[in-house]
Amino acid sequence: MDTGTEADFVTPATSLSTQDGRDGTRMDCRNVSVFYGNKQAVSDVSLSIPDRSVTALIGPSGCGKSTFLRCLNRMNDTIEGCRVEGEIVMDGQDINSPDIDPVLLRSRVGMVFQKPNPFPKSIYENIAYGPRIHGLAQTRDDLNEMVEKSLKRAGLWEEVKDRLDAAGTSLSGGQQQRLCIARAIAVRPEIILMDEPCSALDPIATARIVELIDELRKRYCIVIVTHSMQQAARVSQRTAFFHLGNLVEMGETDQIFTSPRMRKTEDYITGRFG
Amino acid sequence: MSDHIVSAFTEELDRLAADILRMGGIVEQMIADACLAVLRNDLDLAQEVILRDPAVDKIEEDVERQIVSLIARRQPMAHDLRSVFAALKVAGELERIGDLSKNVGKRALLLDKAVFPAMRSGVARMAHPVSQQLHLVLDAYASGNASTAKAVWESDDDIDQHYNALFREMLTYMIEDPRSISDGAHMLFMAKNLERIGDHCTNIAEFVYFQITGEYLVSNERPKLI
Image (tube, rainbow over all chains, first blue to last red; front, side, top):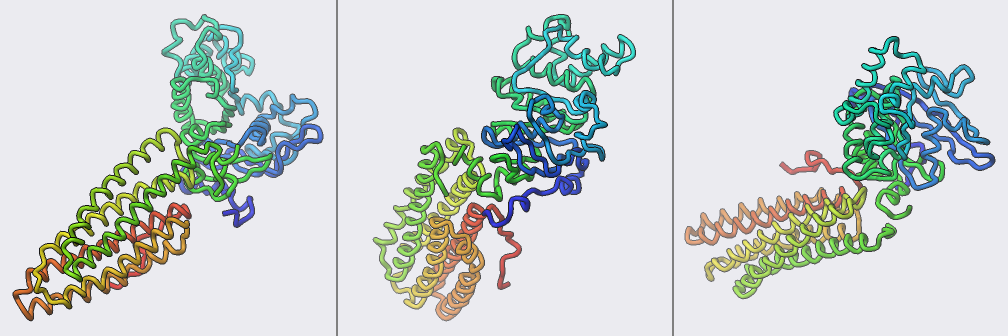
């Protein structure tokens, strides 16, 4: 163990597409560093994120995994004194380039947060809001269809179809989280980022989200940050381990959890430091 | 490897490994004693070997229970996961070795007193390389030494050669004196048991190697005589 440099153990995502017949890389991150003022939170991270699969980012608190995730749809733009270096390429274009509209980018790269955050509006409006501002629906029927489809994909339709006018906040925590996922899906994103989406949910609600993620990965590229090793092991196809702002190791999830190559990864996932 | 943050987890894995080694120690002695009983026609010793087998079965059951509980409560990962998997498989192999040794003991009780001494010593001779293989692979398990495990895995041929030689030797005795056929048949089964024990040692070596390295030894790449 620890016989090579860390970079040796970050296998390119392209190898995945040839092995599994899955689509190739959706997003390619090259030498990404993030600074909060003088403090460096992410150091020179290069990794590629394959399409139509789930990539899990794991690591102890403060390792930079959430900061890195937020780079992927420029959520860090809103933080004062935050600076992102390096390239994050999607469809041949750096998402940080000046011609990219961050609002448009965030409709292509949706995000689901730790705490469900529905708008203080009806269930229907929570979903309809995005398609409406992005001009995705021409008619009322279009919009109704979009709402229904998004709620169905998020596995929430059957539970709420008779009360679409009820407040989004009246739902249970797990339902609210699925509502937020439905809201993210409604604007037809290509990538869905999830930051600890289950940590505020009970095991049943968590299982529903995990089942949903399994379903969603057939259509979307998903990147999930999680503290729960079991969750990373259950939902993802690839896992990246972060420590102190560095990407230590990335590989097939099976390999990371049965035979990690780096000692640091081993120690973390077996509970030897945290 | 450093300890877990949850020290009870480390203690549980240590206990599992200690049980495997205890089990290994018992069966190693069973092989040696069963063969000694054959060599010396020591019926008491043969009986004793037979009586040790339930203890081996008991440890195996206990190991299985520990592992089921450990998986449910700790969800082991990486090296821990491989240790637990290896312990489960190794316990199964050791249990079989115990059974085969017991069978040698049982047959020792059935041998005619007047059996050719050379026949007895043929079986006893085979005990040494077999015990040695088991001893080495248990050492590899205890010390986490992958190259010793691999060496054991690669050197099973020695035992196979012993078995083939012994097989021919027994046939010669049986042809020479048909009255020795009954004893000779028992001896052949004993030799076959010892040869099987060698195979179980090879299996153990595979699991130990996987536990240590996370890599599989591929069976069809093992050097073979025939």
